[in-house]
Every structure is written in C-alpha cells, then in structure tokens.
Image 1: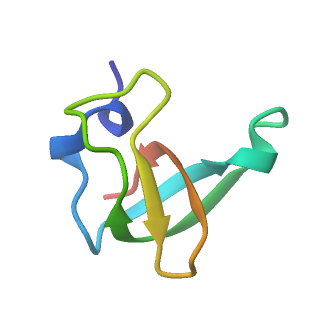
Image 2: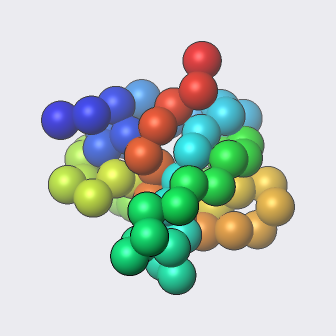
Image 3: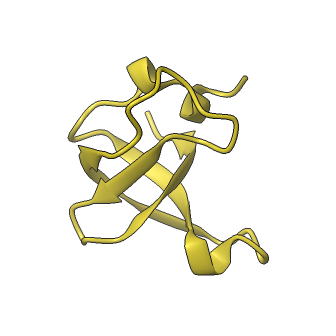
Length: 65
C-alpha cells in the first residue's frame, strides 16, 4: 500500500500529486496543496480523494516531502 492510499499520511497543507478523473486513462499527475480530504475511510486502494487549493479534485498518487 502506497502512502497516498492511507488517509493518516495526508494532511491539509501538504504538497501532493493527484490524478484527476479525466486523467485516469493517461495517468497524468497534477501537483498542488491539499485543501480538503474528501475520503472518509482510513485507506483506499485507488488513493485518498482530496481537493487542492486550486479547486481540483483527484486521488493522491504521491506525497511530496
């Protein structure tokens, strides 16, 4: 399980790379800062769903440290 699949690894203000719904086929990643965590469960096989400060919504693939 990758870090982006575990909710406790993700906090508001953390820089992440997400895959947007329309980019799921291509796998293109979008970088941004987490504004809201939208997934309620402790983990998710496709990544935790978040809203970035830019307003974009997607699933976390990588956490940038």
